Length: 412
Image (tube, rainbow, N blue to C red; front, side, top):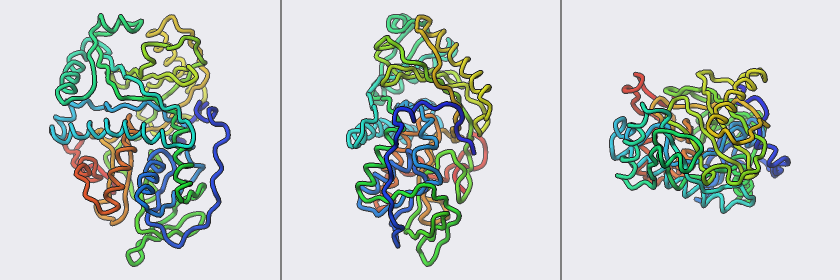
């Protein structure tokens, strides 16, 4: 499956990735993690911190899948607003889920500080604006809900927006505690860190089969046989090697990265910016003063092979950006398309398979995948060490999706 096509920006920021240590397959691991991207690397760290013996397997070079196309916007807010999530799953769980996302933001910051390389993690506010008057009521309702439950944010009316930005919108929520990151450096830094802690990394190792043999999992791969007590799938938007998704859509989105811009900051505090309409436009700046802009989501799972199609969509994104910031000298330097996934209920899938014992999943579907990976790694580290986690039920694999689309949601 082509999960990204076009010219990618992040690999050029770290042109020579670290070499992995060559290791022999151990006779036994506590946990085998399948997938060496953001979710896999964060899970490896959370489990290594608890003393587990771990191997991470990836069918390609690690950190070169979705990680290289990740736009690196980190926010505690989600594609589904808190007041809408309350209506969907109830006040207690909805508020707790948002709290978990806010806690994950702080944990991501702490994790960035542990890494052996600088992942360009920079704290930023986020500006979430109403795309038109029709969305203003929803934005205002969301601000009231966030403040009611103590989440850090402000509300800007049209006058306030015009004070800080060169465009006018009916209203906006400004959230605090968010950040930008270079996801490619972040994951490579995580892999260096866990490798130094004794985690075994196996690249170009594809899982072909998993069988239960007397309570031990026998994992057959293209590189040999592995044995483990548990297996954790952190395969992102790739097809699962075992099982199948239920209740998730795999789509694609377009991204451009501009040439560096002299202005600093480029706009108000170089905030992360996104909007209320769907599909939405979103943007951020980079450490070297570029702008990353994404959007134009399509209900197709695979990135187009045509560079002409990518550049056509890139030109539209440039036009949309220029309409907001008419004075900026914007030129496209990179343009690409990437696969992403969304669950029907807007929550990630995290936990143990409902019928396959010791098979676990961390699938951070949605626009907040890195945050989901962080909070999911903490939940799984508890579950896999036998510690009760009072939040696990919110994101468990098997949950009702009847209110959204009928049937059930999860992993089969």
